[in-house]
Image (cartoon, rainbow, N blue to C red; front, top):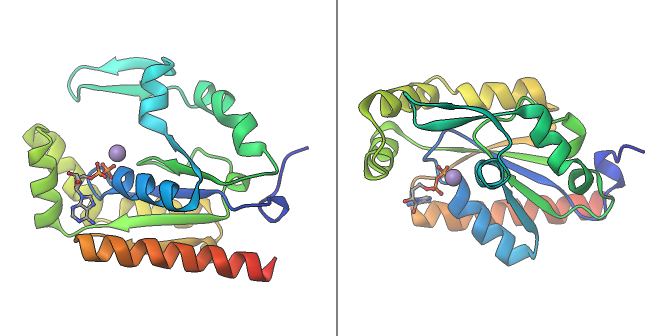
Length: 179
Ligand code: ADP
Ligand code: MN
């Protein structure tokens, strides 16, 4: 009953990476271009109160993984597919959820500016920059998903975003041909 990646009619895509690398902007465009549904995990967690607590120091909700997975399971398990998931972590989703895992990347100075504009505290900025420098999310993705499904894309400029959109569309076309 659990839908495996090759059984889907359309691919499911995970877009992950450190906060500020451009996931949400990228997912919105990709979703529009492909007519895919986008699940912004942070927003779903907030709207549906799928958190276990609020971290006052970081001013953010601690999501409850079991509650979240219950909440999205039917959609992620559908044979139709065509879902884009936007989240900064990736190790707690079942591997079978995704055909393609995109890890967006950004250099320090660009990331710093984006996080500062967002009004993040110095501590939160530093932690996120370190997360990016140490390729934490890329390593997490490689540990959690088959390596042939994981793609690292630099996403520092508008031009690169356009190139990346095209790269993902090419990956989808290739998947459809191989199917
Ligand atoms: P995330 O969802 O990963 O936290 P966002 O999509 O919210 O990142 O983007 C963070 C900021 O960076 C936003 O102000 C957004 O407009 C900007 N941004 C995102 N992608 C790019 C890009 N490729 N080039 C320039 N600016 C970008
Ligand atoms: Mn986002």
